[in-house]
Length: 537
Image 1 (cartoon, helix red, strand yellow):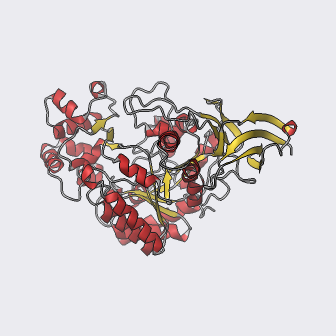
Image 2 (spheres, helix red, strand yellow; image 1 turned 90 degrees about the horizontal axis):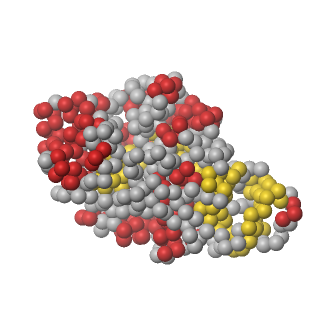
Image 3 (cartoon, one colour; image 1 turned 90 degrees about the vertical axis):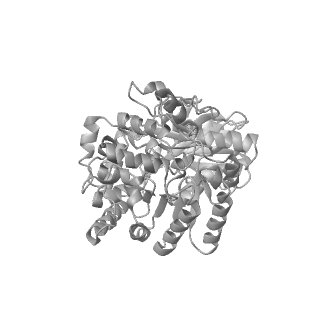
């Protein structure tokens, strides 16, 4: 067999979960041409031969919850992801830059593109306009997206609270259908953030029915991961039953020590639902801290109508916001119900007068300012006029280990791709080390799961969930998204105090048969392709 690349003598972990075996892997063009017993493929017929002795060869990892939207606009290399072995990123939680129109005012509510690029996106009236732009610009990894659930609501109703009118609901259905026909994998909601937090269950179910019609997925950051975790999970399962749509739970977790015992109950609920015929599953990242915005400490109504910054300027409204931060209702997030704030670590402080607080937790910042924590949080938000990326140390390590062992779990980063060069602000280390942390800490060191199972929940399990039948496996005929790594040294290096560190041990990565990582160094290649959901026309 003539081939472009021949990897010889490696341990083959094919992504199915089956036991590893020694073998040779041949790549021809953008496909895997053969996976054969050692020595069956003649190296003389290969343009490049790579000695895989002592290494593992496996399918590339697929990140089902990526936030590389803004990053891909300026740097398509996705360096922090490729060096973890990621070959595909799927975006879309809450918001997408497209479709733009209706009552949407800003295409990049959370991104920070150039003014020129942001102006261009205002002409992207269909979901596919953004995807086509990325294809033209070039990305190292394959990419695709759900349509943001917040985007769908904003298009029809802006940032107003309340139930949609019949006409507004029809707009949501139309926008969702068009996005599905343009290649979206489904709709991805985030029900703790405005404007998606204003969506009633009936609205979500109607939108999900449209997704189901096109064979897509409803994926969701549920309404509560704390005090109302189980109730929120029940809501998602009920939606799946009523809309007859597969449901994926983003980053399954129980936040806050009082809620940690709920994870076994959550697992039981998912198992019971699956036994009853509801297609519900989940993904997770392997860290004891979540990452979101400091704005989650505020009540939802503070952002109604897109008036958060105006509300913070009004003394009476600010006083009401503060009162609910100190004495939140039971429906409020665990973030604002815990009596201490030593676990809240703001990272994304950008203004010069606030950068001295980087590395300090919220209680330390408040003490340095001579304030109580709610006042410090509100003043920082008022000064920054952005959500302020924040880490919350509220997850149980014991629960992480238990979740990793569930057959329906998958791995995701909940982060974007980053180049560590020139970074000034810390970030959650999951952007750099999610997949290598699983392989190093939970497979090699702690043996929480086998190597074969770890690769499966990072590759084929995700591909199957997305309907990507020709990716996620080392099998002849599949696309050549391939990773070669050293199982003895693969590890994450990024920490919460020093996050901008690339992983180690991932040596070679191919995307569609083209090398994007060589001896651990990015080649600069941009061979990634746009991937579409089942409703694409």
